[in-house]
Length: 112
Length: 119
Image 1 (spheres, helix red, strand yellow):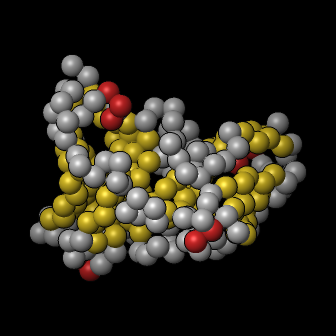
Image 2 (spheres, one colour):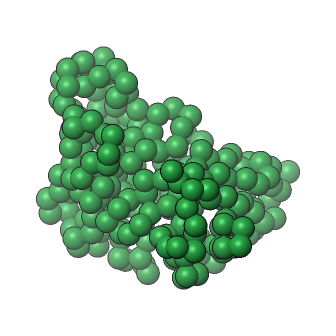
């Protein structure tokens, strides 16, 4: 039972822009805790895409961008490519119930 | 380059204790950072289990806290997970990972190991 809610799926044609939302509450994103985003290709470990709300690790294309506002965060993928088809997860910290790192419910991105 | 590798039994009987080890190469655990465990049931999302700071301080998911123990062995440069009284609901791919702070996310992950709980 994740406290961060994401849409189950989003889709787009190659070259298009898609966004994935991550909705939290006042005990996690709304409390100011950072949001991170991961990409998980089938059968592989998650890969860090965005850290600290909007920062890209070295090697991550600038097609990926993150933002945060209030109790929500978003991941945008511009110029969608076939290789972007994967599961995406947001992550933050929740201060309720003694504190815990939490992941979003996950979003499957399909390239049409 | 930091590398993490999980190891342990792939099959555990119900009510027994699941034990996994994460061997770290390319970085000395005693030098710093947080070392954690994350799991993913088949076809489902990610769940943070807990983490340990290089000094030995531990942080656990409240929903698992009564059953989880994470420890570090700096002499072998590895850290371990023990999850007691397992049930079928604990069947998952278990990943070990490293983060530097709350603002860093987890940039380093092991490849994951599937643990099945079944008699």
